[in-house]
Image 1 (cartoon, helix red, strand yellow):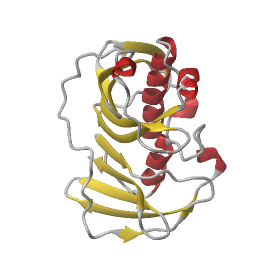
Image 2 (image 1 turned 180 degrees about the horizontal axis):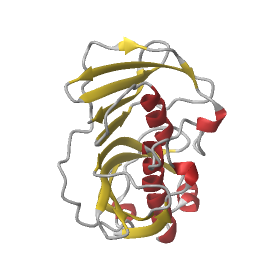
Image 3 (image 1 turned 30 degrees about the horizontal axis):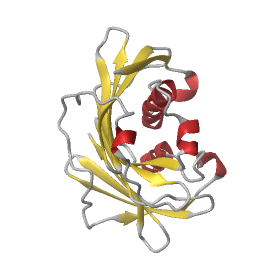
Length: 234
């Protein structure tokens, strides 16, 4: 497992003094980015191969969110790379080695010019170090949303929400969804299903509902077709 050290910064915590969920995702994303850079399969390599990797889903389980100033370690491993799909695990530890949060990610390889799926050759697949996946309850990638949804005020995508791929960054969807929730208990699970990428200036219409111990937020376009489906467990 590839690991990097960190310390929770003031800019990464919420009003409770703990790491926010979007920044938890950022730590995971940064860890896998550095992993690829360090094994020679980073940004330059993807540009040369005319490739992009788009995240299809997250499943994140949270034991505890670290506090401001707390030292942490983040690890990631690739446990599968088959055809067009890639699979990763992530773990965040505290200084004593306790697991704060862990995750499963599924993504796919895309032709950067056409936006179409790309199946990697066997030679390409062999470049990725494959390790044994971590023990966790792996849930389905697709999220089934209850039919009774409350429609909220539209959100227009701003420039600060856009990443290097010219669309909304993965963690920004979670930040939008969290703004749709009021008075939630401590969240212990996040599942995200990405369907389409929103871009600068797009209008996003959120819908939200609660079923059992889960909140469901769907971020839709103006035709109510979803960009992203997110569920939070308490």
